[in-house]
Length: 581
Image 1 (cartoon, rainbow, N blue to C red):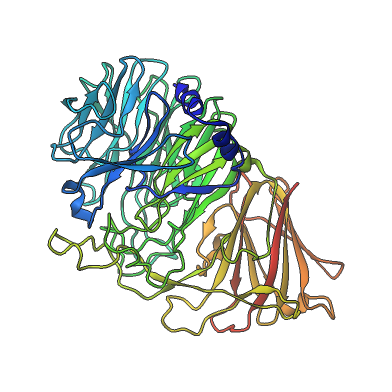
Image 2: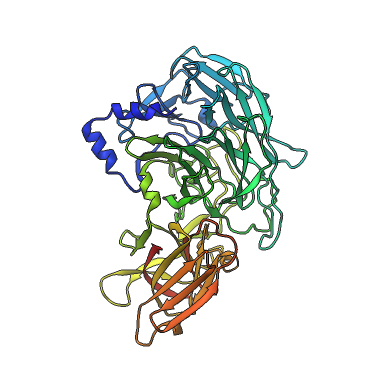
């Protein structure tokens, strides 16, 4: 099952091995030609490929343009593009060890419904073409080949329109003969979104879709699914996929983003998802379609050493590189599907304790990255803005056209800009420090710009999750105050409901500075087992407050925000530090 890792390493030179071994924190190595979905594969001799569409002009052009793939022969360090003109040949196939063949399952490319292409090798121009399931099933994700029995499982979706026009549900297509015959199992439901405060409208009722399936070391199968509520849901199978438990809520916050789980060669599990929460729904949101995605700008990774009972890491892998772009809706043009997010994932384990991740949607955003697994186990993080806003989220949203506009038809596909998104600006600025020491500091204040959705502005910073630790902020509070919150998930910098949903939230006031200090170090000692947070400022301030809500894995986010809609002075922040205890 993991023989490909050795094959990848066998291709690498000593120089390649040095370059790969030196990668630690996530490093971008390529931009793929399609969104992460089911396009990543490895050839028998260790070449890594990612398939895509060659010079796609718009969302409908996928069927007309040639295919292509980028290929790496050195473990993902460098890539070369190749054009594929024969669309009927097998591409992005999954190797089936018990047959020695490759399988690729498609739900487009001119075939009706999900279709399996089975061939002897990647690029086989004469694959067997097998109908997998009825036409109602679509949205095919990654193929899973089990190791305990000779079985293939493919994840798909279907819609129950009698429940709701967009009520998606998960279906598994299962083959026990190498892909030539199939059965379909429809999985259970998860709760629908209910309109409650602070929501004035309905979220997209996507219910249960785009699931990820993986086989654990003991043969148990786990299925984690995307939902339209605030958490991923999970189901288990103890008979290799024939029957499944009722879906239950996980501890992974998320909404409207797809998860990805992968078992590593040593048995550990690695999980990718967007540990984020969108803004409250506005009155015009009707639940039929998404009006705007506001939680797809940060994705995350966690690791488990006990088959998913506990998790570590919860680290941001990638922040959307255009998250503050004032032309966000139109950025990069109508290429692909116009979503511009860092959700959707595929990954490979590489030699030397590395992971390759493909993530994101749209050319402006999607990336191929490599990082070291040990990076997930770090115990501290520091930020002094010497690299600007690279490590923080500061976006505020501009009043924009809302809703999904994919272009309607091939003729009009290039005439509509944007899709389910606000244009943005950074709600915070780097300004000269009041200390006049040639350093820049972060100014967090409300905005008087009437073009913004909200005048509240802020900054959000991630650190390795911990049940006990210290967060330190060096701040100069000159206005009404600085709201400081601790959470185990990402909330929008401008979301003024954070004080109600955070695990901990407090307003630091100007009078909490010791006399004579311009910048003061405010420390927040949190202890999830004791259930409290103590904020201190030297010997001058000491306040202890209880933690709120649930945080089973610990705390991993610092959220700082302006206080009130008209606080134009706010606070200056010179840096932040985190230490796990």
